[in-house]
Each structure stands twice: as C-alpha cells, then as structure tokens.
Length: 622
Figure 1 (tube, rainbow, N blue to C red):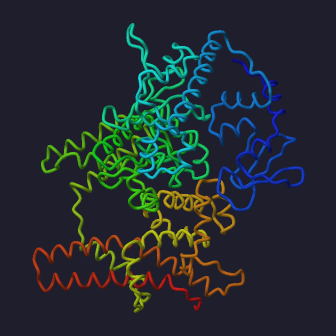
Figure 2: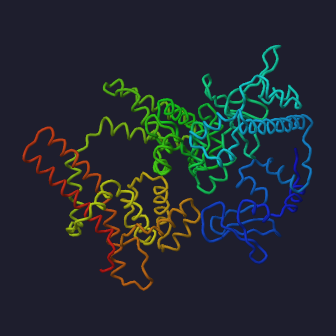
Figure 3: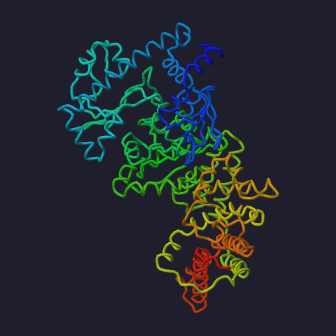
C-alpha cells in the first residue's frame, strides 16, 4: 500500500485536532488555540497547546509535538496503519487499496473481527443471564467490582458443545473455525471450543476483540484456555490489556508486567492501570520489544512461588540477546506463595506500591538466581557459578553492554569469594571522616517515633533531602563529585536523577537552580526533581526555599549541613560493617576489649542517628 504525502496531508486537513484530542483530554479555548494539561507528562498548569489551523499540538513543558496521526500512535498506542485507518474512517476518506493478495487478507481479517465482536456480545449476554450466575459469584468472591466487570467485558460460555455454533451460525462454520471459536477434528462435526468457562476477551491495541481466554469454573483441565493462533491473534506477540495500559503508561512512565489476566485486572482495579500480561507463556522477545516501545525499563511482577520465579528468570535470559542501551528489565519479588492479586486483597494497594517502588535490576536478578541455584561450598561449585555468569554475558549481543555486565559480575564474584574486608580498617576510615565534623554531633534526644523512622528507613529520606539540596544549591555538586559518584540509591528514579545532576554540573562551570531545572526539563527526571522541591517532609536546612535576600550566614549553614549530610551517608557503610564485625567477635569470644569496641561503635552509630535528627529539625537560627 502506498500512501502519498498529498493523501496524508488531505487526511490531516479533514481532522479537527482539538476535537480529536478533546475526546480523552479536557481542553479549553485560549484565543485562536486550545490549551490543556499535557497528557504526556504530569502537570497542574496547562502547557499543552493545540493549533487547529496548523494541525499540530505542542507541549512547552516536555516538548511533545505532533499531528493527528502521531497523536493516535503516541498517545493511543496504535500502529501507523491502524491510526491512518481510524482517522480515514472519521474523515470519510477511502484508504488507497493494497495489492490484491493483501486486500484479500485484510478482507478475511475484517470478517473475523465481525465474528469475534458477535461472539463477545453473546458471551456477555450469557454472563448476565441465568446460566451466568456461577460466573458472577466467582468474580464477586474474588472482589471484582461491577465497574471492572463492564470495563473488561467478562462473559460466560455455557457448558455445551453447540450453543455458540448455533447462535453464530449466520457467520458460517468456516469463519467460526478460523476465528478459533470452534474445534474441527478430521471429519467430525465442529464443536464449541469454550465450554463452562468464564470468558475474558483479549483485545488488540485498538480495543478490538481478537481472541479469548477462558477460566474453568468447575473441575477440569486446563484451568485457563486461550484461543489458538489465528489471522487476528498471535499469542507470542500479543499482550493482554495493552489497549488500556498503553495510554496509562504515558501518564506514569511505567509498565507493570504480571503473569495472567486476573492479576492484571486486579491491579487495574486497584489503580495500577499501566499493567499488561503475557498469555499463558513466558514473556517472549516480541513482547519485550513491544513493551520497550512504551517504556525503557518495565517492571516484572511475577508470582512469589517457584514457577513464578522461574518465569521471571526465563524472561531475564530472553532479554539478554536483545538488550540495547538504556533498555532493560526490572523485577520485584512478591512474598512467597503470593501473586499480585493475593497481595492486594490481603494487604491493600499500598503494599504493592511499596514493592514496585524499589525494583531489582536485571543484573542483580541474574546474579541472585545463579548465586542461590546451588550450595557454593566447593571450589568446583564456585567455578560453576562463574561459568554460568560468563555464559549469560556471552548471550548479550551489544558488546558495550556485555562488558558492563562482565565487570559487574566479576566485581560481585570477587567480593563474594576473594575479598577479605578489614573491618577494623573500615572503622578507622569512619573515625577519620568523623573527626572532620565531630563537633557537629550535639546531644539530642529524638522522640521514639522519629528514632524508629531513622532506624528503619532514613537512607531514602536523607537521599531525597540531599538531592533536593543539590537542586537548590547546584554550585555544591562539583565539590562532592567523588562522594556523589560513589552513592548507590535503591530507588532507580533517584539514582537516575543523581546521575543527571552530576552530568549537568560537569558540563557547566557555573550553575544556578533555574539553569539546572532547564537542563532537567529535557530528561525523564524533571518531574522527580520538581517533586523533591515541593516535598514538605524534607525539613533539612539545605532543602528549604530561602528568600532572595536571605542572610549569607543562612546560605553558608545550608551548604555546611549539606556537605555534612553527604559525609554522614557515605561514611555509614563502613561504620555498619565495623559494628557487625565487632558484634560477631563478642559472640565468638566475649572479652573486655571486644565488648568495649562493640559499645564504642554502637555509640558512634547513635551519634549518626542523633545528628541526622538534628539536621531535620525546623530551626531558622544560624
């Protein structure tokens, strides 16, 4: 099929862009243009403009720019030809005819779409009828709401070998067989594929039903049954819920991948709309590539049982040969024996949100699985681990990425088996760093609530405070390059922001906050940075907004406290290691010397907590 530039221009001219966008985004008239809050990034003040005369939209916040066709592909997630066909239908234009063979294939697909739409309507009717009571009770017991039932189009297939065939007989047996709705074996009479099952429609990116998944409601196998591959449906290339997840992911910048339909539906109902699922098989290379078109690092949330973890590892290994710069997979480990649906029903959506906030990186996942694969208590087993890791690196086609993986695995291997950490040396290193600011450790008794918070999770809070402080005082970044470069944050978004701050400071000799934010606007970290500046809980002296005429002593104090916070965070691992070693020595051989060393390090650790509490106190005095 050839679409000439003239034909495409005519198509664009017939579409009123503000009307098209206004179907999913609230737009308002602004002079000769329209304005809206940008659908491509989160914002509260409209910076997204639509110009009907020129036929384009533009966001002055994130730089999104395009026309009617790009709106359909970028925001709706459609392929180019699907976008053109939808717009042509709206504009009452005929799409240029393809070659005869392609036209014939398209005619078959169009007919099968009619068949699948009719089947979906019939299944929904049965679900809402007398025979569907069992299916309705099943969903009610699983906590699926009426709204979710309607949105996802649940249906029911009666336990009969011929009811669907009779109901859709007008479409012809050949079409019903080709659509995967009937089974034809040799010369026997065709019969219904789905019988006695809760029916879940599988849709393409345009929202059209192309296949079904059926869950059995009584005894029998298989538990889930999918449509076979058809001219409409390729199981290895299709992702369940892609039609809803694609636009949702543009708002969140995230895609969650779960194992099955019900997990995806439960997460969507709980507010995680950016979720997809493969269809009864391990995640394929084609499906990974499709997700990468949406986000660079999707999060895999497979079940906590052995089968779920094996599926996660299979996905990790399938990704290795096709890795490319900036594209990877992240993982979360669910509690043993639980899937996402179980976790949300037992502990609520916040428990799942906490998990996905700190995903595991791909290299960490592979190392963990291989390290735990067998006891590493002999030289041969340790060498076996090294060989398995080397084999995985050999599967990576991109040589730059392969070198980084090889280095990462070598570092872990050396640390696990060959590096003898001198914890007393680390303790001395801590003491030396402590001498530089020991006068700052004043006596302060925090409340029990504050003390508990610091012990359980002050690292993330301090990290956010430091990043916010660096954004407000970017001139301080260059003075702490070495320490900041060594910081490794569990939160991938914060780690990415830290990298952008270092890069910006290295590229500019002088940098103020507004200049830094201008640089960050061109990255994926801008919203995270703005969020840190707005965070009311970050009550550090260096994270507060100072007036333009603030006394120099206040600014100096902010810079001084920021430097100290960085030192505290980077020195803490050495102290923790030394304390752990001292505690071990006390347990192995309790002596007056070992006990005194343990108590000294415990007191030093308490001083860290007390100083961190002091840094968070609201105190505007100098």
